[in-house]
Image 1 (cartoon, rainbow, N blue to C red):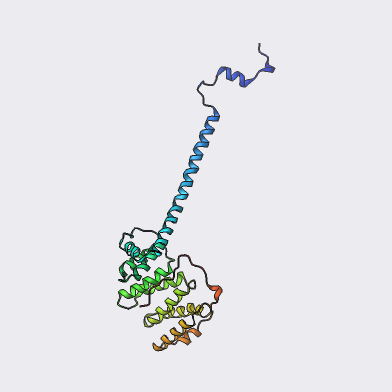
Image 2: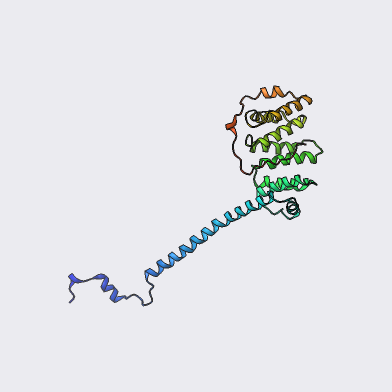
Length: 247
């Protein structure tokens, strides 16, 4: 008769139902789990690196385009760039199209429009669209041009002196076609130029130009209630100093 005090239930069950010979050991499952986790981590890392490499490649292509020779620029312009999804590259392409000895306004318009579709914060591209739309309409500022000009002002109200100067000149040049809200806004943004940079000559030229066209320059400037100071300037990525001329 078995000793009940020394009876071990686990041992007795093991004798009745011994484990199969080919039963996998727990340690093997853990190793497989670690291997699978490692490969999963590597796959996730690769997925994160690929977009970074693509972004770096786009930056290199844009830098090469901006710093290309006239011959290289012309070769790039006649190439197939329509499939690009890099706003910087497209904006640079639009600017180069306007700098060629034979200006290619059609390519500039297409490149600038696609840049703004990909990135609505492209203030310079919006300004180019306002300029090119006006050119296409024979110098008449239509609703499409006004919308592009407004979006340029929205995207970069005070962040770049060159762009502020260009828009101010564009508004004064096309004063009769400008709604009152855009007129006032152009003067408000241009007020920044009184406080930063060597803009005295430019502002004097604009005042003289306004006088020739019957624009009450001083009255509009006096209406600016919140003059901007130098600390109101903010950085803006992707902005460059090459812009179209007012129509």
